[in-house]
Length: 60
Image (cartoon, rainbow, N blue to C red; front, side, top):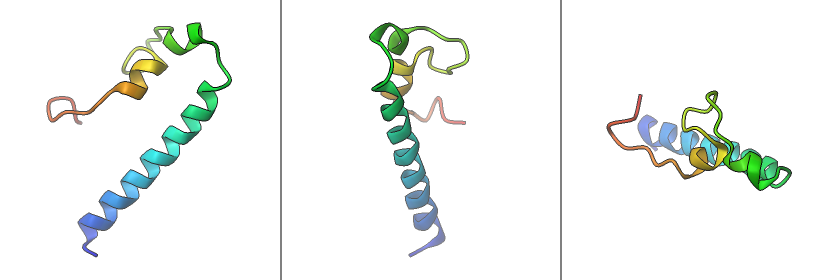
């Protein structure tokens, strides 16, 4: 496996793991907290963070 493929797989694994933790947390909060706008989140709310799909214009 090339270094690039290895890094891509490792990054994907870490993203999946972090989303799993976030989904576990979401199960413990109410809907109002799930959709509450918060300036600390780059996408505004936990809901928006979970549905955000990166594009070439908003990557790094």
